[in-house]
Amino acid sequence: MTDQPTINTLTLQHRIPDDWAADPWAEVRPLIDGVDVLREVHPDGFAPSCRHWTGPAESWPLAVTEEPRTIMITEPPCTAGCCGALYVTMRREGDLVIWDDWRNTSNIHALPPADFHFDLARYEAELARAAADRSWEEPVDTVARLLGETLAESGWFERWDCVLTYISPRREEPGLPEVLAVPEGVDVAFHQVGGPNEPTRYYGYELFVTRDQPVEQQAQLLAQHILADDPRKTAELRDH
Image 1 (cartoon, rainbow, N blue to C red):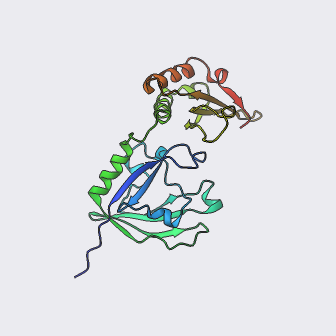
Image 2 (cartoon, rainbow, N blue to C red):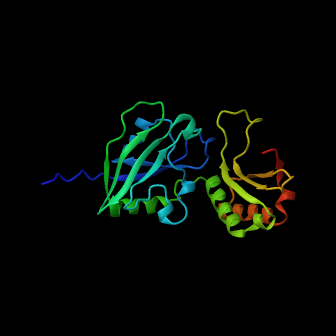
């Protein structure tokens, strides 16, 4: 009789990275049996950002199918091509989810994690829970998320032949003198692609968030400010 594999437990934990300048959104970090086994292998690596946990379930970073799928499960603050990343192959097999065939392209020569086996139903329930989890958000995260949803649904930038590039929370950087500190808020960037002989023009908003006003109200007011006029007139023109 073939030995039954040990069934592992996956827990997904939102965590704002220490080096949040690389990506100010929280990473969704996988803990296996309560242990951050990825940190032992790729200590500087970031797990997939919560930005990638929107949309249909099949698009989530850790979604599995019967066909094996290799994903980058942690990446460095720079790029995978620069400093390497950690990859794993995952697939669905009956009522199990299997993670195996680990590959570490960073310069850290630690042993790869073991193969892991998860109960399919519990695994998919944990993915759904994490995708819906908002308990980790600080006010700046909630405002950025709500504002992003409103702007994406509005089609406003397309109306002005522009492309919304990104929306992200802006956190206060600890340790800076007050005169140099930038208050926390939301950064919005977009661009307009010029014609054959015209340059691409880049624009941005540096918006501010407070902790003493309802987040829904703040997001609504910021959206109204942007949607009130041609954004190319109200945003700051930038070099890139």
